[in-house]
Length: 311
Image 1 (spheres, rainbow, N blue to C red):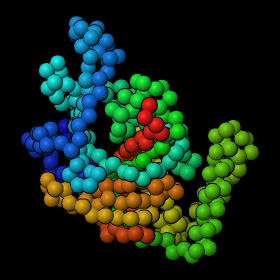
Image 2: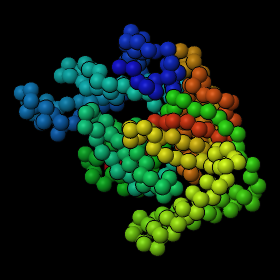
Image 3: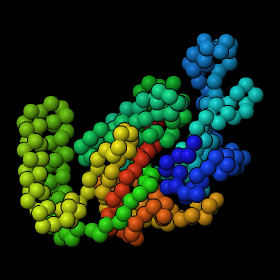
Image 4: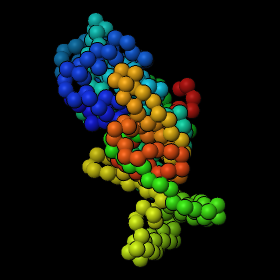
């Protein structure tokens, strides 16, 4: 199985089974981190189908290796009775240490594998933001002990991109920036009220959308759309955690994958006032990223939950 976003972390040439197997062997023999979770509930269900003794608990594991700072590949699977790791699936990742939001988080398990997807409603985005949970084992351990482990938790968002372009910034004065911040803050408050059922807020937002649409329709006749739209955040494709984004680059670092020697960019961008990190292969990026310029591309959103206590 070739992961679509493997190229994003510097493995663009890994397009066949042999190379993937070699990468898996490297990760399993010299990992950066390994974690295991003993799931008693899963063992009971497992026993129904394969006649295993209920006391023989299932042990899930995630083995990761970083190939550049905070960027790498995670291998997920299960340990058998002899503590042999049985590979199930893998995914590339970018881990961020920036807190993106402190809004309420909901987590659900995927139907087909032992992984999780998270949802957070942040008024700045305007939609329910869905992400692939990176620290799933930590969540499993905490949720088993405390059902309210997500209370007061924060979220660090990151993303992998397989195709993007760099755009120049929109010329704005300091006064323009202040007015933009005030309008955005007012809009976020209105969205929060609308979520609580305020009919006046819903009506006001609807009228604003209509006014914005009319204004853009007039201006677009003689202007490029990206000279009018400063940033956007919208779903892309049919997978729920994939998005198309346009945001301003706050910082940018260039790293080398120490296994393949391919160059990757790790950028911190702000999109609709939401700050998160993005990783992309230099080969997949058109343009030169610099602070102040804009990033436009398709991303796979990931997230790491920062728990409030040691429960």
